[in-house]
Amino acid sequence: MNAILENLSTKLPHLADLTGYDAIAAIVLIMLWLGVGWWVEDRPARQSASSVMLTHRMNWMRQMARRDPRILDGNLLGGLQNSASFFASTSLLGLGGLLAMLGQAENLDVVAHALPLSSETTPDGLRLRLAAPIFFIAYAFFKFAWSQRLFGYCAVLIGATPEWDETREAEIMAAAHRAGVINGLAARSFNRGLRSMYFTLGSLAWLIGPLTLILATCAVVLMINRREFHSESRAAIDVSKTL
Image (tube, rainbow, N blue to C red):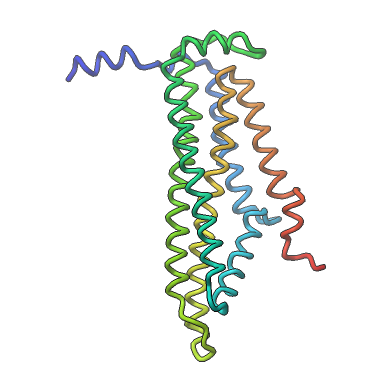
């Protein structure tokens, strides 16, 4: 066993292959990733597009409770499940590609050093830099897979919601509320998966150097902020506006 561990330790990349600038860039990446999650989901000053859509999802479930038959709701939910399944499959393909890149670090080193703003590093250093996009794409897969399962839970809750009867309004609305909560949690996991895919693309810039990682990450954050708070779609779904 000791011989196996010693053999692995000689083959695995060492942290010494990264510089202090890489450490700073990694800290910036983590802080921005965590910060944008809070900014989108819990910002008190203004709701994001994702938060506003939660209101519409709850309204959807309330309308579902009064609708008969509920074929439309089933079709809509099936589309959401298919979207989550598609992105989960895409994440797995991306993960496979990134893992394959680990074995091509020597070739990546040549390409990376030929690009502007590149920093000196070793093939083992590039392997360490690939840890960031691998983490984000793997995290995205788990979020998409969980989102698909939660949409399945929501489908079951819709099926368990009794047909509309005014004498059972409180019971039916409670069931609709449960379905709406699960629908919202599924959407939250889906959105987190999407943000992780964005950060996967941004963190690939680390292959060039720590400066490009910071610039790419900031660009990803600005893009997410615009889409969630200042886009035309955000204005269109605003429940506070009336026609």
